[in-house]
Amino acid sequence: MSRYFGVIMMEKKLYIDNLNIFNTLECNFRCNHCMLGETTHERISTEVLEKLFENILMIGVLRFIGGESLMSLETMRETLRIMKERRIVVFKLRITTNGSLYTEEAEKVFDEFSEYIELCRSKYKDFMDDFGIRPTQNVGLIWSVDDYHQEYFYDEVCKVPSLARFYTENMQRLESSNHFLDVRGGSGLFKSGKAENLEEALDEVDNYHSYYYEDDDMMFVAPCLNVLTDGTITEHNGSIDNLKTRFNYGNIMEEDLREIIRRKLEKTNSFKEFNDKQYEEVGRFNSSNGFDDSLTR
Ligand code: SF4
Image (cartoon, rainbow, N blue to C red):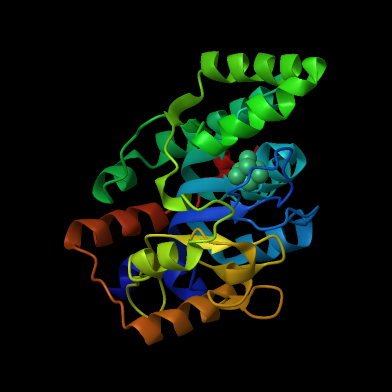
Protein backbone atom coordinates (compact mmCIF):
# COMPACT_ATOMS: atom_id res chain seq x y z
CA MET A 1 0.00 0.00 0.00
CA SER A 2 2.68 2.46 0.98
CA ARG A 3 4.49 2.23 -2.35
CA TYR A 4 1.57 3.99 -3.97
CA PHE A 5 1.80 6.95 -1.70
CA GLY A 6 5.49 7.83 -1.82
CA VAL A 7 5.87 11.55 -1.35
CA ILE A 8 2.23 12.00 -0.43
CA MET A 9 2.57 9.49 2.36
CA MET A 10 5.74 10.99 3.74
CA GLU A 11 4.45 14.51 3.62
CA LYS A 12 1.03 13.62 5.03
CA LYS A 13 -0.85 15.90 2.68
CA LEU A 14 -4.57 16.52 2.36
CA TYR A 15 -7.13 16.03 -0.36
CA ILE A 16 -10.14 18.18 0.52
CA ASP A 17 -13.34 17.26 -1.22
CA ASN A 18 -15.07 20.62 -0.61
CA LEU A 19 -13.10 23.55 0.73
CA ASN A 20 -15.13 26.64 1.65
CA ILE A 21 -13.12 29.79 2.24
CA PHE A 22 -14.77 32.77 3.91
CA ASN A 23 -12.69 35.31 2.00
CA THR A 24 -14.57 38.27 3.49
CA LEU A 25 -17.35 38.95 5.99
CA GLU A 26 -18.19 42.25 4.31
CA CYS A 27 -21.39 42.74 2.38
CA ASN A 28 -22.96 45.59 0.42
CA PHE A 29 -26.51 44.41 1.29
CA ARG A 30 -28.22 44.50 4.69
CA CYS A 31 -30.80 41.73 4.40
CA ASN A 32 -33.15 41.16 7.31
CA HIS A 33 -32.51 37.44 7.47
CA CYS A 34 -28.73 37.54 7.20
CA MET A 35 -27.18 34.52 8.89
CA LEU A 36 -23.93 36.34 9.46
CA GLY A 37 -25.25 38.53 12.20
CA GLU A 38 -23.47 41.86 11.95
CA THR A 39 -21.31 42.11 8.84
CA THR A 40 -17.76 43.25 9.54
CA HIS A 41 -14.79 44.37 7.47
CA GLU A 42 -12.85 41.18 8.15
CA ARG A 43 -11.03 39.70 5.15
CA ILE A 44 -8.84 36.65 4.98
CA SER A 45 -5.15 37.59 5.04
CA THR A 46 -2.29 36.27 2.94
CA GLU A 47 -0.80 34.77 6.14
CA VAL A 48 -3.94 32.70 6.78
CA LEU A 49 -4.10 31.59 3.14
CA GLU A 50 -0.41 30.60 3.14
CA LYS A 51 -0.97 28.58 6.31
CA LEU A 52 -4.11 26.95 4.93
CA PHE A 53 -2.40 25.75 1.77
CA GLU A 54 0.74 24.52 3.51
CA ASN A 55 -0.44 20.90 3.59
CA ILE A 56 -3.14 20.74 0.96
CA LEU A 57 -2.47 18.70 -2.14
CA MET A 58 -5.75 18.75 -4.02
CA ILE A 59 -9.23 20.25 -3.79
CA GLY A 60 -12.35 18.81 -5.39
CA VAL A 61 -14.52 21.92 -5.17
CA LEU A 62 -13.27 25.27 -3.91
CA ARG A 63 -15.90 27.78 -2.76
CA PHE A 64 -15.61 31.39 -1.74
CA ILE A 65 -18.13 32.34 0.93
CA GLY A 66 -19.02 35.63 2.59
CA GLY A 67 -20.49 38.05 3.30
CA GLU A 68 -20.55 38.92 -0.33
CA SER A 69 -17.40 37.21 -1.51
CA LEU A 70 -17.15 39.43 -4.63
CA MET A 71 -16.41 42.38 -2.34
CA SER A 72 -12.89 41.03 -2.04
CA LEU A 73 -11.54 40.07 -5.44
CA GLU A 74 -7.98 40.60 -4.20
CA THR A 75 -8.27 37.72 -1.69
CA MET A 76 -9.52 35.50 -4.53
CA ARG A 77 -6.54 36.53 -6.65
CA GLU A 78 -4.23 35.89 -3.73
CA THR A 79 -5.75 32.41 -3.28
CA LEU A 80 -5.09 31.61 -6.93
CA ARG A 81 -1.55 32.98 -6.76
CA ILE A 82 -0.69 30.78 -3.78
CA MET A 83 -2.34 27.72 -5.31
CA LYS A 84 -0.37 28.16 -8.53
CA GLU A 85 2.84 28.75 -6.64
CA ARG A 86 2.35 25.61 -4.55
CA ARG A 87 0.94 23.63 -7.48
CA ILE A 88 -2.26 22.79 -5.68
CA VAL A 89 -4.70 21.00 -7.92
CA VAL A 90 -8.33 22.18 -8.01
CA PHE A 91 -11.15 20.74 -10.10
CA LYS A 92 -13.99 23.24 -9.66
CA LEU A 93 -14.75 26.68 -8.27
CA ARG A 94 -18.20 27.69 -7.01
CA ILE A 95 -19.33 31.10 -5.74
CA THR A 96 -22.71 32.12 -4.41
CA THR A 97 -23.35 35.83 -4.84
CA ASN A 98 -26.08 38.40 -4.37
CA GLY A 99 -25.32 39.30 -8.01
CA SER A 100 -24.82 43.03 -7.56
CA LEU A 101 -21.03 43.19 -7.91
CA TYR A 102 -20.29 41.14 -11.01
CA THR A 103 -17.98 43.68 -12.61
CA GLU A 104 -15.61 43.26 -15.58
CA GLU A 105 -12.78 42.87 -13.09
CA ALA A 106 -14.62 40.00 -11.39
CA GLU A 107 -15.10 38.29 -14.77
CA LYS A 108 -11.33 38.48 -15.34
CA VAL A 109 -10.59 36.85 -11.97
CA PHE A 110 -12.91 33.95 -12.82
CA ASP A 111 -11.41 33.63 -16.30
CA GLU A 112 -8.03 33.15 -14.62
CA PHE A 113 -9.43 30.54 -12.24
CA SER A 114 -11.10 28.75 -15.13
CA GLU A 115 -7.87 28.61 -17.09
CA TYR A 116 -6.00 27.11 -14.14
CA ILE A 117 -8.78 24.59 -13.43
CA GLU A 118 -8.72 23.55 -17.09
CA LEU A 119 -5.02 22.88 -16.78
CA CYS A 120 -5.49 20.84 -13.58
CA ARG A 121 -8.26 18.81 -15.21
CA SER A 122 -6.21 18.08 -18.29
CA LYS A 123 -3.40 16.71 -16.10
CA TYR A 124 -5.57 14.66 -13.76
CA LYS A 125 -8.50 13.42 -15.82
CA ASP A 126 -8.09 9.80 -14.67
CA PHE A 127 -7.91 10.92 -11.07
CA MET A 128 -11.23 12.72 -11.50
CA ASP A 129 -12.80 9.64 -13.08
CA ASP A 130 -11.62 7.34 -10.31
CA PHE A 131 -12.75 9.60 -7.54
CA GLY A 132 -16.10 10.33 -9.16
CA ILE A 133 -15.50 14.05 -9.73
CA ARG A 134 -17.87 15.11 -12.50
CA PRO A 135 -16.35 17.53 -15.03
CA THR A 136 -19.12 20.11 -14.83
CA GLN A 137 -18.48 23.83 -15.46
CA ASN A 138 -14.97 24.91 -14.26
CA VAL A 139 -16.23 28.05 -12.52
CA GLY A 140 -19.87 28.25 -11.46
CA LEU A 141 -21.51 31.41 -10.19
CA ILE A 142 -24.75 30.88 -8.31
CA TRP A 143 -26.98 33.91 -8.08
CA SER A 144 -28.92 33.90 -4.84
CA VAL A 145 -32.21 35.73 -5.37
CA ASP A 146 -34.20 34.65 -2.34
CA ASP A 147 -37.11 36.72 -1.01
CA TYR A 148 -34.91 38.63 1.43
CA HIS A 149 -32.29 39.65 -1.12
CA GLN A 150 -35.05 40.87 -3.43
CA GLU A 151 -36.72 42.73 -0.58
CA TYR A 152 -33.47 44.57 0.18
CA PHE A 153 -32.87 45.34 -3.50
CA TYR A 154 -36.36 46.71 -4.18
CA ASP A 155 -36.88 48.45 -0.84
CA GLU A 156 -33.44 49.96 -0.29
CA VAL A 157 -31.18 49.89 -3.37
CA CYS A 158 -33.84 51.17 -5.75
CA LYS A 159 -34.16 54.34 -3.68
CA VAL A 160 -30.77 55.33 -5.13
CA PRO A 161 -31.19 55.26 -8.94
CA SER A 162 -27.46 55.38 -9.79
CA LEU A 163 -26.76 52.45 -7.46
CA ALA A 164 -29.73 50.52 -8.81
CA ARG A 165 -28.42 51.05 -12.37
CA PHE A 166 -24.90 49.93 -11.40
CA TYR A 167 -26.18 46.81 -9.64
CA THR A 168 -28.59 45.96 -12.45
CA GLU A 169 -25.80 46.21 -15.05
CA ASN A 170 -23.70 43.85 -12.96
CA MET A 171 -26.60 41.41 -12.63
CA GLN A 172 -27.06 41.41 -16.40
CA ARG A 173 -23.33 40.81 -16.86
CA LEU A 174 -23.50 37.90 -14.42
CA GLU A 175 -26.44 36.31 -16.18
CA SER A 176 -24.76 36.48 -19.57
CA SER A 177 -21.35 35.29 -18.32
CA ASN A 178 -19.94 31.90 -19.35
CA HIS A 179 -19.33 31.28 -15.67
CA PHE A 180 -22.97 31.73 -14.68
CA LEU A 181 -24.37 28.44 -13.39
CA ASP A 182 -27.67 28.81 -11.58
CA VAL A 183 -30.23 30.98 -9.81
CA ARG A 184 -31.27 29.96 -6.32
CA GLY A 185 -34.41 31.20 -4.65
CA GLY A 186 -36.37 30.22 -1.55
CA SER A 187 -36.23 31.47 1.99
CA GLY A 188 -37.97 28.75 3.98
CA LEU A 189 -35.14 28.11 6.39
CA PHE A 190 -35.11 31.63 7.77
CA LYS A 191 -38.81 32.37 7.88
CA SER A 192 -38.63 34.26 11.11
CA GLY A 193 -36.00 36.63 9.72
CA LYS A 194 -32.59 37.64 11.05
CA ALA A 195 -31.85 33.95 11.47
CA GLU A 196 -33.95 33.80 14.63
CA ASN A 197 -34.65 30.14 13.97
CA LEU A 198 -31.01 29.37 13.30
CA GLU A 199 -30.57 26.98 16.22
CA GLU A 200 -33.37 24.86 14.89
CA ALA A 201 -31.92 24.97 11.38
CA LEU A 202 -28.50 23.92 12.60
CA ASP A 203 -29.91 21.00 14.58
CA GLU A 204 -31.36 19.63 11.38
CA VAL A 205 -27.99 19.47 9.65
CA ASP A 206 -25.92 18.67 12.71
CA ASN A 207 -25.15 15.11 11.66
CA TYR A 208 -24.88 15.80 7.98
CA HIS A 209 -21.21 16.68 7.86
CA SER A 210 -18.61 14.05 8.62
CA TYR A 211 -15.02 13.52 7.67
CA TYR A 212 -13.40 10.43 6.27
CA TYR A 213 -9.79 9.61 5.94
CA GLU A 214 -7.65 6.83 4.70
CA ASP A 215 -4.45 5.71 6.36
CA ASP A 216 -2.59 7.62 8.99
CA ASP A 217 -0.61 9.47 6.34
CA MET A 218 -2.87 10.52 3.49
CA MET A 219 -6.07 12.22 4.52
CA PHE A 220 -9.17 12.61 2.42
CA VAL A 221 -11.45 15.15 4.00
CA ALA A 222 -15.11 15.09 3.02
CA PRO A 223 -17.69 16.22 2.45
CA CYS A 224 -16.81 19.75 3.55
CA LEU A 225 -14.31 21.93 5.41
CA ASN A 226 -14.87 25.61 6.16
CA VAL A 227 -12.19 28.17 6.95
CA LEU A 228 -13.10 31.53 8.48
CA THR A 229 -11.23 34.76 7.74
CA ASP A 230 -9.14 34.40 10.93
CA GLY A 231 -8.15 30.77 10.20
CA THR A 232 -10.79 29.08 12.37
CA ILE A 233 -11.66 25.62 11.05
CA THR A 234 -15.38 25.06 11.23
CA GLU A 235 -18.35 23.52 9.43
CA HIS A 236 -22.04 24.32 8.99
CA ASN A 237 -23.59 27.26 7.29
CA GLY A 238 -24.38 29.16 10.47
CA SER A 239 -23.96 32.55 12.09
CA ILE A 240 -20.43 33.77 12.59
CA ASP A 241 -20.96 33.59 16.36
CA ASN A 242 -21.86 29.91 16.13
CA LEU A 243 -19.02 29.15 13.74
CA LYS A 244 -16.52 30.78 16.06
CA THR A 245 -17.79 29.00 19.19
CA ARG A 246 -20.05 25.98 18.87
CA PHE A 247 -18.48 24.69 15.65
CA ASN A 248 -14.94 25.90 16.22
CA TYR A 249 -12.52 22.97 15.83
CA GLY A 250 -9.28 24.93 16.08
CA ASN A 251 -7.30 27.62 14.31
CA ILE A 252 -4.66 27.01 11.65
CA MET A 253 -2.64 29.99 12.87
CA GLU A 254 -2.09 28.13 16.13
CA GLU A 255 -2.16 24.48 15.12
CA ASP A 256 -1.51 22.31 12.07
CA LEU A 257 -4.64 21.82 9.94
CA ARG A 258 -3.98 18.06 9.86
CA GLU A 259 -4.04 17.84 13.64
CA ILE A 260 -7.33 19.74 13.80
CA ILE A 261 -8.87 17.36 11.27
CA ARG A 262 -7.39 14.30 12.93
CA ARG A 263 -8.91 15.32 16.27
CA LYS A 264 -12.30 15.74 14.63
CA LEU A 265 -11.98 12.37 12.88
CA GLU A 266 -11.15 10.58 16.10
CA LYS A 267 -14.12 12.17 17.77
CA THR A 268 -16.57 11.14 15.04
CA ASN A 269 -14.80 7.85 14.29
CA SER A 270 -15.25 8.41 10.56
CA PHE A 271 -13.03 6.21 8.39
CA LYS A 272 -13.27 5.17 4.79
CA GLU A 273 -11.17 2.84 2.64
CA PHE A 274 -9.98 3.57 -0.89
CA ASN A 275 -10.77 0.97 -3.50
CA ASP A 276 -7.94 -0.60 -5.56
CA LYS A 277 -8.52 1.65 -8.55
CA GLN A 278 -8.25 4.73 -6.38
CA TYR A 279 -4.97 3.53 -4.85
CA GLU A 280 -3.63 2.95 -8.33
CA GLU A 281 -4.65 6.41 -9.46
CA VAL A 282 -3.10 8.11 -6.44
CA GLY A 283 0.07 6.16 -7.27
CA ARG A 284 0.06 7.45 -10.84
CA PHE A 285 -0.58 10.93 -9.56
CA ASN A 286 2.41 10.66 -7.31
CA SER A 287 4.76 8.83 -9.65
CA SER A 288 6.35 11.95 -11.09
CA ASN A 289 7.37 13.28 -7.67
CA GLY A 290 3.98 14.74 -6.98
CA PHE A 291 2.72 17.55 -9.13
CA ASP A 292 3.36 18.30 -12.70
CA ASP A 293 5.67 21.27 -13.07
CA SER A 294 3.53 22.72 -15.81
CA LEU A 295 0.95 23.64 -13.16
CA THR A 296 3.26 26.41 -12.14
CA ARG A 297 2.72 29.48 -14.24
S1 SF4 B 1 -27.84 37.57 3.33
FE1 SF4 B 1 -26.13 37.64 1.91
S2 SF4 B 1 -26.50 39.45 0.65
FE2 SF4 B 1 -27.80 39.65 2.47
S3 SF4 B 1 -26.60 40.83 3.94
FE3 SF4 B 1 -26.22 38.68 4.38
S4 SF4 B 1 -24.39 38.17 3.20
FE4 SF4 B 1 -25.20 40.08 2.37
